[in-house]
Length: 248
View 1 (cartoon, helix red, strand yellow):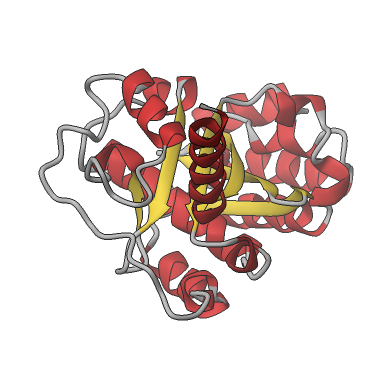
View 2: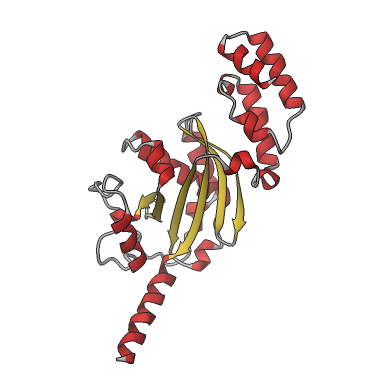
């Protein structure tokens, strides 16, 4: 049926494609839904794609170990937070939308290829305007420019983000910035997204780890997101330096 749907969709035989879609929806399962969502031409049928996306969203916790999902291209992102307290207040969907919005800008505005996005790990921080920025743009000597961030800068590809001239502050908030991850922020980003940049489903898989199924420029892909507390890193490095000095 999948092969017939692909052929009918390509040849624009709508009646046959519609019948095939109805059959595939009827027998949709956690085992085959990612494969069906990956079918060429599925984006032409909005009703079909919406039903598949709804099914995936409702069953993503059971789908997250699906072999088709595991084999998708994956964008790996680490997001630095001000504190562990801030990390506990993250809204999963809004976090994933912020990451998706950052990836969209890298591809559409900075001309990064999808291959570059999925073959590298990116370390991002939250700027005061509630946007994600690459840690390559953190000024040298900044309190958040930790040894880990410096190592990341050295390992980053020369053509990624660091060529940007604009730098946005991380800043030190007086209280956890819950609003940047609020549901309202996520919904606002969703309304701005184009159909080819879509968050289909997301879930928490560890204490500070998340995965999401998305479309990147129309291609089905996966996000793997990890949160880290930048102040904790700074404190650990400070303690290590103090210990080294005392040992001398």
